[in-house]
Each structure stands twice: as C-alpha cells, then as structure tokens.
Length: 482
Image (cartoon, rainbow, N blue to C red; front, side, top):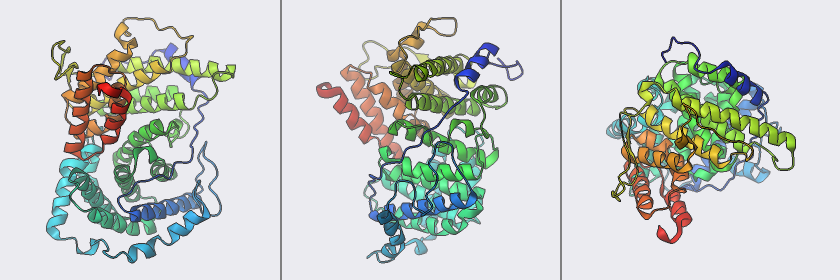
C-alpha cells in the first residue's frame, strides 16, 4: 500500500485498540545501585550528574505519571543521606586522584582520531533508525561551539575504543566524561537541544560502563530531562533523533528490569496520546521506512509495558480482563506491522536453513538497511514475548495475514538468529542483542548454540559492546550441551 492509500489500520482495530489502551498506567520502580564501573570515580560523577538532573526537574515543575514525587531533600528517589554525602564529596575525590585524567592536554591528533571513530563506529550505532543521520551530520557541528557536547561525544568514542581493546587504559574516557559533566551541569536548566544531546550521549556511555541489569538509574535521569524539555518522537530534527535513541534504550531497560519504560507510552508522541491515535500517526503521517522501524520500537515498548505492568491477573478478574483485551489488541497490531511492511523493510534475499549445514543452522535473511534488519528482529521479539505470555482463553486463528508460522515460537526465534547471523551492521547488532538472547533460550541443538555464541562473540569483538554476560547466561541455561 502506498503512502496515499488511506489508513493501514481498520476501523474495527481502531476501536479495539482505543478500548484496550484507554487507561495506560506506567509504573517506574527504583533502580538497583549495583554498578560495576572500571573506576569508582565513574560512579561518583554519574551520581553527581543524576543529582543535578533531579534538581533541574524539580525546578522546572516536572511531575511524571506513575513516578513518586521528587523528594524535597534533593535526594533522588532511592538514595539515602549517605549517598548524598558521597555525591557531595565526588569532586574532591576526583581532584585528589593520584593520576588525574589528562583532559586538558588532549592532543590535536588524538581528538581527530576520536572524532573519526565517532563518525565511523559510534554515530552509525545511534543513527540506525534515522535516515537523516543526525548523530553523524548535526551533532558534531553543534559540538564545535558547545564544550559539554564535544566532550560527551569524545568520551563515548573513547569508551567504545577501550571496550573494543581492553589493553587501553580507561582513564581517557573517564577524564572526558568528567569534563563533559563539569561543563554540562551549569547548562542543565536551559534544557537546550545541546543539553539533551549531551545527556543522551552520556546515557549511551553509561550503558557501556555499567551492568545492563543496572541501567535504571542512568535511563531515569535522561527520561526526566526529555520529558521536562517536551521532546517526543515527533519533535522533528535533532530532538526527534535524540528521543528515539533514548527510546530504544528505554525498551531494553524496562525489559531487563521487569519494569515499564521510564517515559510513559502516552508521552512518546505528544502529551497523553491514546494508543489508537499513536498507531494511526505511525502508519499514516510518519513518512519513511525509518519511521516504520521506530513504530516497531513503539510496539516493543507496548509489549514490555503490557506484560510487566499487568498486575495480579490471577485473583483479580478485572485485571485479567484488561490484560486479555490489551494482549489481543497488541497481537493484532504486531501482526499488522509485519503484513504491512513497506518494501524497504522486506528482505532482499531469504533462504531456508539447510538441514545438513551445521555451521549455519538458521535461515539466511539479508536486509538492505539497519531499520529493516533490526525492525524485523523487534517484530519477532514482540511475537515471542506475546506468545510466551498468551492468556489461555485466547485462541489464535490463521488468516491471510496471520500464517501458521506466526504462532510458532521456534519460527520467530530462528528468524531472529538468522537475521543476526546474516547481517553485520553494528548498530542493528547492538539493538538486536536482547532479541537474540530471547531467541537463543528457545534453541536446543548444539549447532544452534555454537552459531549463536559465535554471533555474540563477533558482536563484542567488532563493536566493543559487551555480550559475554548474555553468552554466559545462555550457556548456563543450555547446560551441558553448550
């Protein structure tokens, strides 16, 4: 269907979606503080930044649905007075380091190398669902006149290199991180695009530094700023790119912590937009296949929130009925996403798996762009999670758009694995890590296990993004056959 052919969603589906998601509460729990920084100074700096973000949010009058009121003492939710004392002493400890990070003496050639790495490696991570490539084309230009944005981009680039080559000392990224925060904090109250850009870049950096299971604190601060600045997925330009970069992290933060997304879904597009309106906006007004990939992110967030926020569906009949209605509506939306894909989101080549190919036991599925590669993985992730949490009273029936394979956990899992093994864009790899882990748990043959572990190792070796923790979890789950 072309862009000019009316709605891609039926009126019946519109009514069902509107009814199922008429009241969508979002719960935000306090994150764990179990961080594993290469240096305690990282934790001090991040806590300092988080404290200032909370104060900025309070001064702006921001309140979030589902989030407890900001404490008047200035302590972020979940932080004790002792934690605040720690934050207050952070700067003094950093200044007293035996070997302080050499940020002031960053040599010209080294800065050029870091920017080259940003252009070649880091920006493609962040622009994977943005055909206009704002992180590559716009952010560096803004950084020329904005010190905190310059240091934020350089810190992220340096940390990526340190992760890819563990022999590099972490002090370079630490020093740049410190410089970024020192320049950013005085500007927080402006909530300018540059401030939000630095916050998002530092959030990505923190995702690399800390345990993925402890992403909550880092996502929380960035979510607060985005909402305070009224930045959404339809803000346009750089702001829109910043939102979707954060949104992808928000989905996986919610999934990993069994919580809902930090930014409530009804604020992803504009204030308090109902689900049916959001769906129509994605399908009719957001042009470009990269926007269709963002729609997959939105559906992934919806799946995470509906499953993690369902409440007591065993002893509470009303909660059960609401969950069943939302599950049905989401399943229809997810399947409609797949059947309505624009041609750019469909595979260029697709070959079934060969039964005797133990080196590549999955289907070979090649896509021509990162939005298609990862967008389709997100579809399969949504289908798996919905099937795993399907209410027993729901009966799925095949139709022209919902083939029998769509109801198969194994089919979806093998598609995810095949896509990961057949495509090599680093940004798509990184955002496909959690779907690959979900799919891997459904694989049973040793050849499948080996192939998945090879993909995970390749992702870490080539991109620097940590995957060993997921590989270790899969090996433990598979047992002796791994």
